[in-house]
Image 1: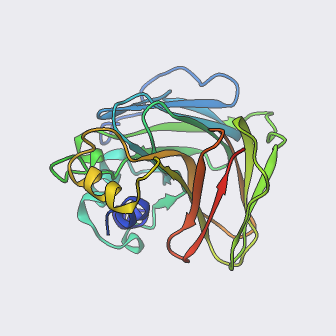
Image 2: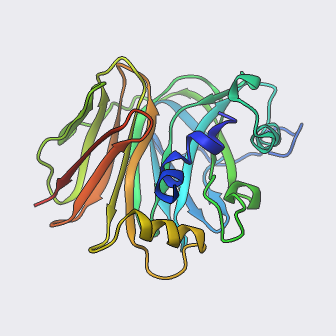
Image 3: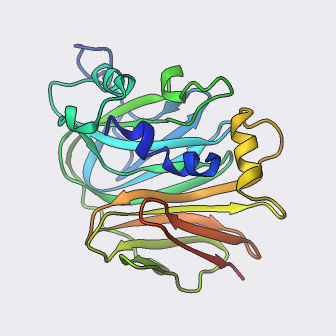
Length: 269
């Protein structure tokens, strides 16, 4: 997970070429039911400090003014967020940090967007969010304070939602059914033999990769040439996550797995 400076920010990189140490977890409120609400702004996350395991919905909201990442992982007992930050700062290969486990988050979420990720979290311990997207000076947001976590324990009685549609990734292609405008719940299913990511974005009319490159390099100044409504970083073969997001009528979206060179596009009627 420490290598996410390359891996989780691969989407943004491709568009431009993704506790105090030693102190006990602070006492906080348990997230209501099975929902953990995480709000991102410049440059912090607001989230509960404790949550219940089992089937969990991570309700991710960007209430800031720039695009933010919700990279997500778990760290083993005996390690802290300070240890994780030091590992990220080192830039070393993730194999050097076997206590840090990548669980796949959202590479980029536009301001004003929110997405619900429902998945099973069974391991008790500390879970962390962090953001690698850089500011205008090239400093990753996590270095400015965007790294935070919660402690997971127990098991809820929640069940996964019934999806409105299923998007499937094989090792050859994405299979995307007709999707409706508005708020919808989609199962993102990896039916391949490799890990696959579901990076979702939509260019504004007349805009493309070059426009996004210039916009990112200048610190996201001016109107955004792209919308990031959700998606998920790489998930393991044979697994699914459920994503509740909002799709706009008449908009064309691109779905990509950059690492495995899969891409498709679809238009919402």
